[in-house]
Image (cartoon, rainbow, N blue to C red; front, side):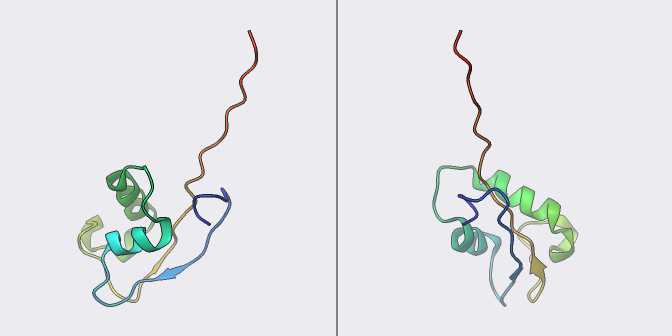
Length: 79
């Protein structure tokens, strides 16, 4: 749903021993996007869930707010 609906949002509770990569895979799947940029974006909007804003150190039992990845569609006008 995160890839299809631009306004889709839900809360995600981090489980013990879960990594940000695990969460990205569960919520976004394996698509053609830069996982590093996505990781940094998730950290930026969920600073409370990470130790010193480090994507490698995630607190268990924190609530994350993943977001939609749907890109806007651009309408082109004929020349």
